[in-house]
Image (cartoon, rainbow, N blue to C red; front, side, top):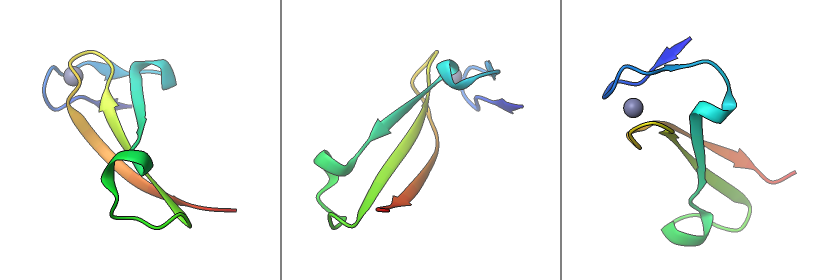
Length: 55
Ligand SMILES: [Zn+2]
C-alpha cells in the first residue's frame, strides 16, 4: 500500500486519505474536467492528484 511521505502512515483504505475536489477553488480547469487532490487523512500532506474527465 501507499505510505504518507510526511508521517509514514499506511493508507489501508479510502478513509485514510482525503479526496479534495479542487474544481471550485482552482479556477484553472474548465467545467469539463474535475481536479482532485489526494491528501493524507492523518497529517494533511498532499500525496497525489488526478484529473477526472466528465462523463
Ligand atoms: Zn501523513
